[in-house]
Length: 227
Image (cartoon, rainbow, N blue to C red; front, side, top):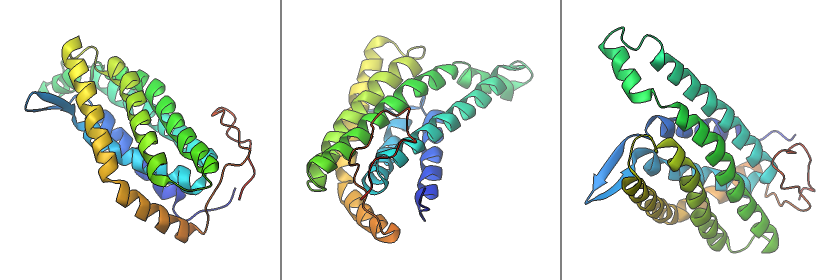
């Protein structure tokens, strides 16, 4: 596999943002009756990075990043969860950790479902439409990817991660509000995305097209033709 200057940095950045989102998934802000999670506010940065990686490096390397994120998330959540349920009554700090993270296993299960589903959808849309439009119409591809990916993530992650914390009405409020916010923020970040894609392509001296690539995320080692 060709060595890239920024690929490892993007992996580390994605993992950092995702485990931060995991930690803040229970933190909900009330804004004029609309509920939005702190993780939902931050997560738009992950969508931005995922889109950049697929656009620059192609679907295969983007999928490798996704599997790395899932593994790191699972390890992080498992360690936090186990630490919170062992000797929960030892002292007030232990009790506080137990109160916050005793249901953290839900986040891990939610991540196993939502992260692969949403990121694979985003990678497929960005990659496939890039080939269809010969690299043009990034605005359209980015917008479709954003709306679809954010919906897939929220509809798979939040019912699992938050079902034990909030009633159905508030959960729906959180999902709708967070999706709306994420789409708006993603569109506001579009100029940043365009600029970063241009800069990263120039630094890496590549502009990958997934001609003939297999979109089965299990067989990531099967290469398509590179351009």
